[in-house]
Length: 326
Length: 254
Ligand SMILES: Nc1ncnc2c1ncn2[C@@H]1O[C@H](COP(=O)(O)OP(=O)(O)OP(=O)(O)O)[C@@H](O)[C@H]1O
Ligand SMILES: [Mg+2]
Image (cartoon, rainbow over all chains, first blue to last red):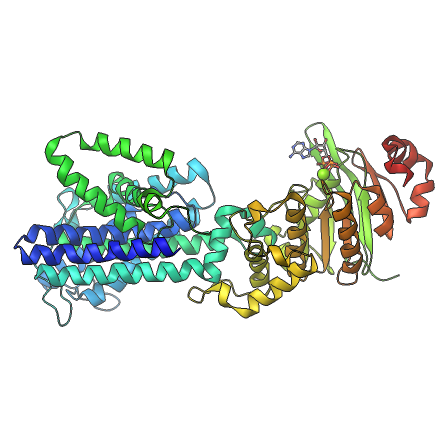
């Protein structure tokens, strides 16, 4: 525990230091990369609740990530065009306020996770993986074929959404927003993992029959975790849309689901800063190996296989040793 | 005679050509230990599984605590007060013994959906859980991973978990299986005290334990209850001798 906590602090400190150095040495690109790590780390932190703590191998988290992104894009585009979202039964306007966009993104992705989870969690194993994937693909094709918000071309956000007291167009300010949200999500995951609910969720992963025998429904516990997981990933999606000032169906593609899962696996499931570490490693590899060879994905694949075969705890597992006590 | 808390009515279960339960009618009354014995594959576990809700009967009905529970699932039956242990231990292996019992304690106080406070710092969870472990002589093993406990300790842990459910009836499937004589003796003593809290439907192969504990014994062979009565009656029943006790040599001589 002590060792992992120290490594977690180190990772958090490094992620904070990178953009500051970027600023000092006038390398704004580093700030953007660090922001991307924080956001994708947040998406992975969401998935970690389901995949890590709950043992629910969802290959459909792009649905929540993308929905969060579209919430940000759609609300912003309506606000910028001065067109209400709808006028009946009451008039609802768009908004460029992150403090409104986030809760909406969280609720929308949470509701989606409730529906997808309620249907998928009746299955397990490979079937669960396939069904979550299928639902995400449904959302993906819906986004492609719905022309109102750009269809295949996606939707641009002309001005980054606003946060009171900050200039979100300043890269450092926007990084700070994302970084703080990542830390909040990590802190909440930490509390959850040790709480009564965390006990029940971990129990469901280890032995669902045991949980049912003591009178706790594994289904309900898993569904709750799945919804919370989708909410966090959805929030990350909203930030990602703001980072790129653009949303497109690619945020919803299975490729995105796979990437989010890779962050968690690379960093280590059930490791608090595992997803952030995984996202960082992924992005660093992408930008170093990506320049050297177009086949960097192949190397990444080999690395993943090695990690899964020889170090179930991901990078943090390698650094911190023994997996922590349940 | 007090009203039974648990009653099965003509339970029938087939697995292909095998009739695992054939018209099984039995009951469990307050304060008693009712042993269900029979040769391997006779259908004892299948009876337990149907009562617990793991296996759906093909026919028949189960009443528990004054109501029919046929339509309830495993979770709902556990919540009504049926505490079950498994023939092959089933615990959360990564959890400590203590955490395994805490899971049951938090289920009973019906507050599972708490997300912030650390469970291990909640005295209302830890203290009762420790008390149950103590009763099963596991208190000094509380922090050990359940997966690292010895076989006998894991069997005892399952009973501690069942105890934590404050049940209205226990369903114990071979709690002594694979235990040494010393641990078996300890467990006999513990189960003896347990019947005062809730009656026990006890499936067990250890005939010494059965005859030491049971108020009533039912004998099942090929899914059918062939005899039911006091230990004396069962011991002197010729059909039972032939079908079961006689075959088991030493055990039968208990
Ligand atoms: N899920 C199943 N599928 C097919 N057959 C089964 C299944 N479960 C039990 N059986 C069969 O039903 C019969 C009764 O099995 P059961 O496990 O209830 O016996 P038991 O009395 O508990 O035996 P033991 O003393 O070995 O534990 C056996 O013939 C067994 O092979
Ligand atoms: Mg059996």
